[in-house]
Length: 419
Image (cartoon, rainbow, N blue to C red; front, side, top):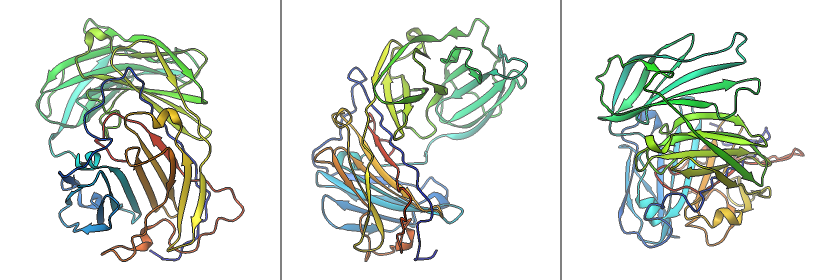
């Protein structure tokens, strides 16, 4: 890749805020503050080779960056200060490089990171679903969605009742099936998941045919519904998922009840009735908005009336840095309602027109105030570093066009997936 690049496109702005309310489940231990001392394990060894980092470094507190060998895809280091950082570069099949920088507390970093599961076997199961409908002009249709654990999914429709569930699982897992109605004309109601089936402790053999799913039969039950009140912001859409942990952000691990539902003056949400839940399972409500773009996350167990405060935020100030090789810096303030949350993360990223991306992820536990000044660090002189991996590594031409870069801010309960 050339080391002389010019920004030729305007980058879209995005602000994402994921809020946890006071009556959400208790936050997990760790994080926030306090020294480390434990060995941190960041492990890509179970990932395909092309998904592993081609460069990796870490820093303990405010010390220097230290590189680690990438051959094994496993990285072990110790954070003994109250906070630290990691940085790594990945290259996709098209040769596009993505640089990720993570600043977090010692507890968060020492919790480790494993993007590809070490457990579970690939499965392919057969099945069929009935009780699904549609209208003649396809203004609306029903979808049957079946999840066996967090990673195996299958779909069925009225005209395609047969389904194949593919993915991975590890031992007995719970199966959740939802009937959701997708409408293109404003009807039926916006909380379009109405019937559900739950089968606990399932362990079918690979290739097995599952008992049929009849969403109008005695095994199915009605979804629980309730009201949603949104205060502030400019909300546009609603998503609802269901998880068997306290992390809505598990990669491919959220069972989706419905998504992309337009916000109206009166909003109704739907989910799992309390009688069908077990301890630890949570609804994952997400509200998306704009000006700039954002999303608010709400975790709760029992379906009931929800009131969600969505914050607003001034646009970030984006400036080019003249020292060193070309980089961009974002200055912005995290809204007070978000900064007060027990756990949070803010991300500044930008992408060049050839696809290269850099993301700077900063945990609230790293920050000393809600005022953020975020820019990629200089890695010149570190073993193996190539400045051509930055989105901008030469001439920085903003021109007369408005320049905006993606910002995301998130509060979340678990730290299983670094941002």
